[in-house]
Length: 492
View (cartoon, rainbow, N blue to C red):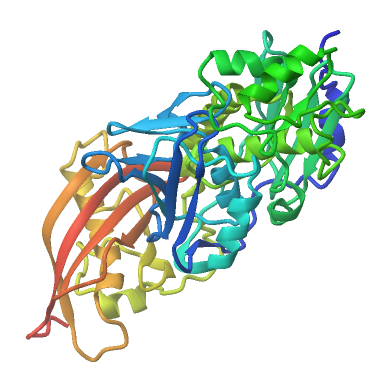
């Protein structure tokens, strides 16, 4: 019997359950731990006892593992591009270091909405503990979660992303959705498990509804796993063992010897040692847990409704790569500042000239539409009457790239120059790095100039990242370093 497939009506059913289109303007912030967490235990496959220390990290650090037992203590970023193995668990590797079975810990961090953490580990595999994410959630909750000042940018899907593996009978789809929801369906052609479904409606439910659910395997798989040098740290207490085929006493005795137990038996429910399930559909919920952990490796916080039929680590990772590719393709569009010319500006041209020392024909900022202590968005309307068009490619008018950079620098002056001060200031270029021109700017274009402060201003020196847009297209970008100097004369 083939596994159950998702009929098209199944997808539309979930779409009717509250699907919204992208566009939420709600502001979110990044989070890290309040204090360090230490957790110890044996890895399920290696059997080696390890200790990991989960430490707070700065904004935009992400989740990174560090192998403290290896020379140089290499860092391994928790990213789908670093996945090297998905046989029964998810393993990442980079810079000469490797860490396996990371999915339960990654799911716990996602469930706690922790964005930044350094995970020091003195071995090659994360402890299995009780086979769920519950123990990790418990320890992380004790440490507490701290909101950071840096904004958390969620990425939205611009269309459905589908994935299929016909050989494994796996189907997965990510739908645009204003939230984070996951549905999983499993069908192993097992009389004991049957067909099971699990649903995570919001990430805040993860801690109670999904995290306690333990990993599972089938009795007939155990010997094969042992022969393949896996589950050295396995125990019937950290995995649900499903017995869905007839077994004799000799087989049970052999498994008892492997686990160094003398009390293993098969219950009437088809579970070893009459293990009490925490939920009737605990296996399906654990598969959902694995999906959360594996999709955390996308590397970008995103909103979507995930529907997964028969998911597994290898297909989860391949699906995560497709989502990451989609986000990278549309990432710059998410970052385009919103501009409605019908709205009044924050600073009009009269107020602009009170701050900037530039005047015609070299004033390249028409208005300011957004301004904080670390970010400014300015507008420059490019017309055919600009003086530089007389000599720059007559008959084929193109705005000089150096003037686009100058426009960015003038916009950045609103971050660098002290506001509401009687003193006057000038700004001078010190350095331009990583400057790239990607599209032509021609008469009729409206330049949207975004400048972001990269580091606090020290001794009058500021470093800013600048991006210039026309519509939703990036036309130029650069990192600009400038010095602010108090003016000793007046040019007004």
